[in-house]
Length: 257
Image: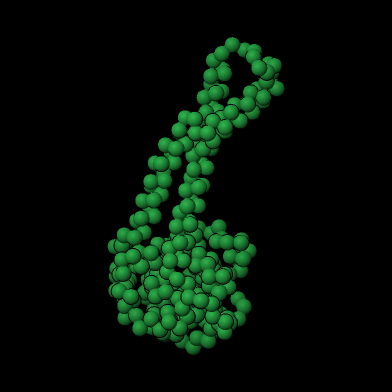
């Protein structure tokens, strides 16, 4: 990791930016869902066309034999694609409406308080003055800091991961050293250093909260290597969980901040 330089502070990332990020993510998912629904309808229609063709006498548009089978298959596929795009049968729309509803429901569930978070939030309230201090110093939302700490350590100042990350914000030894941490187990040092590092990541990725979170979990090198959130299940799950919890805290004011 390169040396952390916070001499040039970027502007505070407004809450609406994170909410907009989640909305854009939902729209991208819906676009992919609609495309998948159209592809499914095309496959289904292609199968129907093939079945219908098999039920009529041999002969017709194309000559018999292997070439005939290939041409017929290509013809069926193309016709099916066009029918699906024109929504002639409405199958894609039916599938999309049903699945999009579940997708929206999943998104809305992020605003419902998971039973498992209240004990951690209550535990973290004793660190609220430190979180407030870090938030003001590095221009990072307090709710986002709460969400990161919840996901990283569950609010346990003595937490240590199998990879050796330590404390409330799970700092690796090398990162802690570069951030000037003397006692990684001290909640104030750990939180201030963790938020300082996250602020640096926000600067590094032009204020993109998704990428900054991914980099906090998987390292900035991996985010740069893949040109976005790395295809690691752990990292993808981490980003989603933190943003969901942030959204819940923001909308329900669980932390009263």
